Length: 392
Image 1 (cartoon, one colour):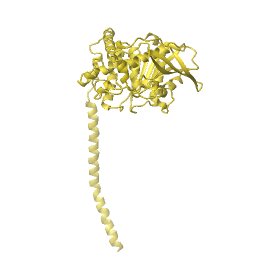
Image 2 (spheres, rainbow, N blue to C red):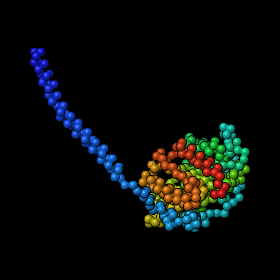
Image 3 (cartoon, rainbow, N blue to C red):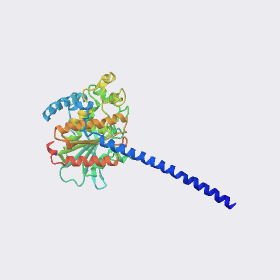
Image 4 (cartoon, helix red, strand yellow):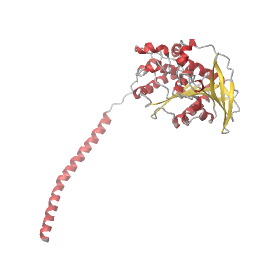
């Protein structure tokens, strides 16, 4: 019995040993195959041609097409500025009244800054409400910011940090970093909500049928700059603006409109006109209507004669930071924003102000993440403190 078992085992070992030559050939074949693969990869790398980077041409290139120097750009820029004023129908704004600034409440916030609830006139029979923060350590004129809230019913309450969402407490964040800050209510939010509800512009358009909601809030935000200029703690050459969402749009429009604003930072502002299959949202037939007069053209497929890359370029050579999320809304549209910003940079370069423009893109949707807040604060501080701020 033992002999039979040993014989069987010997037979098995013999068979296995007989497989070794075949296995050896197989492994050799595999090694040749792998080596050939690596060789092909290396040859492909060696054969890949060296070339100059190809130019990036897009429809956004119309911003500076045919423009070769700063003088030509400034001439074109003047045309764009008039198109922008026509878009917001600035000619239909009312006469600016005396400010008649009133202080309704003062609160010491953690021994860091004084928060004042104020109001001031924006039309002959209409007042705006805002919070104003003045750091207690401020002894000399310095940095100041207009902080604009997003589409939130309580408006400035959120910006002041008096609501649960502290990520959008712009006034509080900036005041703790040493900025004087004014955070006004949007004209259909906070203490100014119309009977139809927050952000309903029906009554505004009944009162001002030829004006636009964008013209209205831009005009009012410019008056917020007037308020800052009444304060001895504010350096008139170091005023900035920032905002999120609707406030981000407001920051862009204000900086393009009012050259007293030396630096702007917009976070998750709405998309532009072109490459936007939701473009009619800029001229709705309900609720909040930005530009009522462009609706007939949009319905026929015609866009306004100016787009956002041209409005952003109006800010040059003053400073602009654009923050967006590639997954905020329609992703294909948001990706176009990156290409658009590359073209906006060309306008800043034409005015020798490349260091005054920047953009940051993340993937955290419609939000104000920590890194964006820190970036906004540092950007505004560095740009408003720059040696040439007063010359911009």
